[in-house]
Length: 107
Image 1: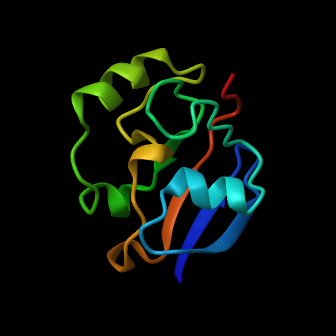
Image 2: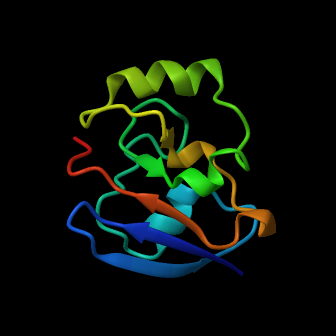
């Protein structure tokens, strides 16, 4: 299991144990994290799993795909340089301790 931390917009943090190979969105939903909706089920078609990845982990993630980049233009909350879709981030051991900030709204 890999430790992942979800921080809500009000500063509340919740650490969960995610399975390697699972997406960040799947881990959030299976652990009841408020603030991740995942309406499209992880196919990068809705942007309701928008997160802000903490700076220390940005370089550990694969680059944005064209589809993810396009969907990040459709987020309800402001897009930032740290914006990613949680459905496009696969959990690996190298991401242990990953923390993401959740926007105030998804839909």
